[in-house]
Image (cartoon, rainbow, N blue to C red; front, side, top):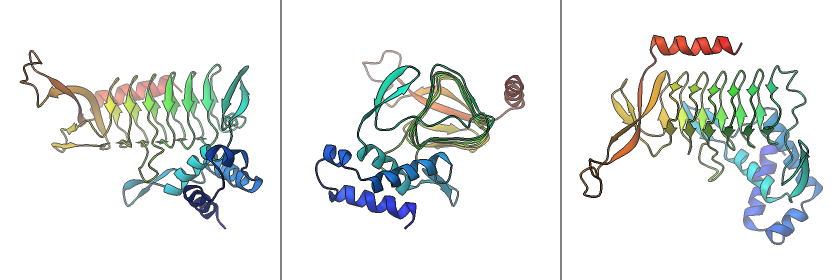
Length: 283
């Protein structure tokens, strides 16, 4: 049987309750065979052999069985005590090994760069402390994960991406059919950005600091002159603005009420030059 079929069978048994006992008992009695499958699954994630989402016919789609495998690692493992940086922590999974980062040209600074088991880091990646990459997430070659950044479970971050300090890339683990957050190649996110709920940031976008990108907030794309949700088209410069709310004339809101929005324009020459200067500083 393939790893995919093993995971799908195991997940069906768990959902149907044919793994005997309550949830705590199931975790405690997980067989060696089951744990072997779960460990092979985590190894495949870390080796970039499988991914939580892939582009199909131009659209990002979740790999449901991969997300099922992530969920099984929480459901079928018991909490254990682990040591990290002189601290005992309690989790169902250890942290990923970072022994081969040097061989891949990647580096992480001390005191708080945390990569959870089942996450994938590419080559020439920089992780500044403190930062955190969760299970199922993928960080592509040449990407910077700056201080106080979080890359959530199953998030897909492309190559040569810059995640500014204090940036949140949200995780989408459930429901398994929902695609996670995707940051495509060449994107630059300013400090304090938040990207959540399966939002897709297209290739080579430059996003201003403190911008919230989520499917619930409209993107006013001035290039195509349309309002879109859930994605930022490639080659855009985006920044946060506030637009008039439908309750703007309400008596409770003196001077009018406003709601958050995102404005997207063409990437100008000055923006590209500034990004290139930053690249040079990080060489």
